[in-house]
Amino acid sequence: MLLEKIISISGKPGLYKLVSQLRNGFIIEDVTTKKKVSIGNSSQVSLLDNIAMFTFDKEVPLFEVFENIAKNQDYKETISHKSSDAELKEFMGASLPNYDTERVYASDIKKLAQWYNILHKAGYITPESFVKAEPETLDPANTNEEVTLTEKEAPKKAAPKADKPVTPKAKASTGAKAATKSTHRKMG
Image (cartoon, rainbow, N blue to C red; front, side, top):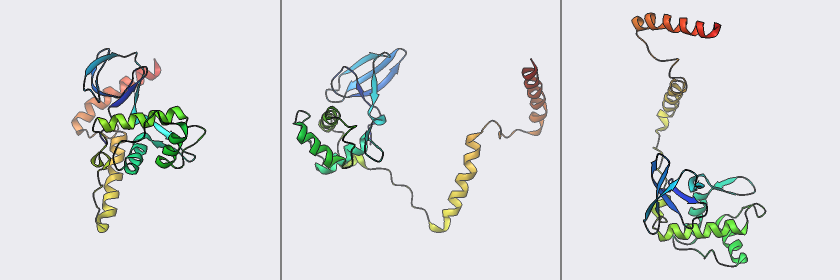
C-alpha cells in the first residue's frame, strides 16, 4: 500500500503526505486538498505506517485494518465518525473481530473511521492499494540453493568491515598501521 508517507499531525484535522524534509521541518501536502504547507520539527507527527490497533492476541497494523474495512465496504466509504458509539463498536467488530474492547476506545474507532473516509475520498482506498507484491515462485528443486545463497549473503552484510576483501599488498601496509593505532588507543 502506498501509504508509508501519510501522517497525522497533532492539533491539525485531516491527513497529510510528507513531500520533503527541510533543515528545520517538513513540507507536507493535505491528502484531500493537495495544498502544500511547511511544518516545524516541533510538530507532533504520527506516521500511519507505525500505528497499530490492539487485539486480544497481538497488535494489528493500521493498514491491515483499513484493508479489512475496504473489503467489508466493497472499497466504498464507511460509516461516519460521528455515528453513535453502538454503531462504531459494531463497525469495529466487523473490521477487526478480535479487537481489545478495553484498550481500543470509542475515540480510536472514530479516528479510524474518519481516517479511512479521508483516504477513500483522496483516492487511496482502491483494490489495487492493498495488493502486495507476490514473492517469486521458487522451483522446489532450487529451494535449498536459494536458502544457501541467503545464508552466505547474511554474514557479509552483518560485518562488512571485518570481511572486507583486501589485496595482500594493501593488507601488509594498512594492517600494520591499523594494529599500531589500535594498540595505542587501548594503552593510552
